[in-house]
Length: 398
Image 1 (tube, one colour):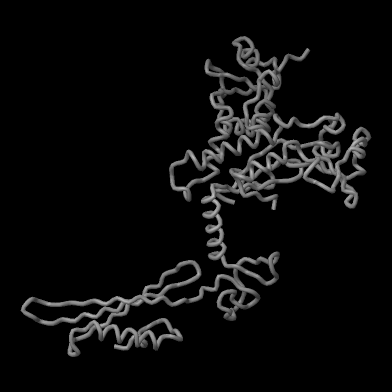
Image 2: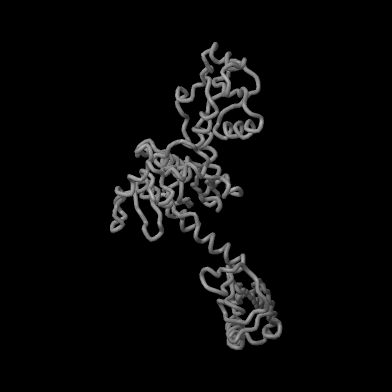
């Protein structure tokens, strides 16, 4: 039986392969007059970029003796590379160099013009990267810059009460020190957020970090959710950093900036310090508390569970909240772990209102329950921590 005729794979070494099989079959046979039957089994396996073809040759020799029938099987496996063209450079395969017809795959022009990778190859590379990351007990963390890690403004936009900063900027000769930098060539001034260096140093031990350049091992830290509408479950939303007056105006705030007030966020109690605690909590739960196989863990579920702990045990009723704002406020409270009711009962712990004169607000005062402004929920959402109710008490208008 001709192996070459039946083989679906053509290789430059096919003659040597056939000769090897013939020698092996002859050596395994008890005598030259045996009946031989050769069966070819072609099994195509896909393993990343290489397909492996397996040939199984069985030599069965039957001989009648006083002791019965003797059977001998010989199985030989040979691997033959068949390029699956994982990507292309122009019209040429990046692996085997074969000229390809047409263009397919995702372009990576920012790496090199004309480079394309197929979806299967991208998936393989991504999975390899994630496995390597998890083996080092790290997750991904995507960081925004402005309003999250720093705040910048154009020099002409400095308010009159901020001009004192021009003489207080730190030297660019050593940016590892200082926090206020004047970039003359760009006509800008940048202020690093307090605690930023400690935050980045400690976070880098737990996360592979990317600056605003997604999936089950990715967290995103940003001051706005609009850029991540498809990845809200990965997002840690934090309070914006408004050091300069132009930043306040950009977002419609008429209040004085931190620079105008000649103050800044507190290093220990500031936003970055609080968010670092959240990141440490998520990291610990992901690697040390979850029991399933690490490849099956999902940081988005961990993030949800951490978020639900913020207002866990709080039972909330809303009163006199603008109808357009009520659905989002209710959803926010529930994501933070609060139970939201429509009517009052003895289980209610907080009445959230904008008017202290409503029936529900008066009930809260009478029953000694917390009567707070909606900002209490919003603050808890930003700081990932239940806020002191006394800072958000709703008082009757005089």
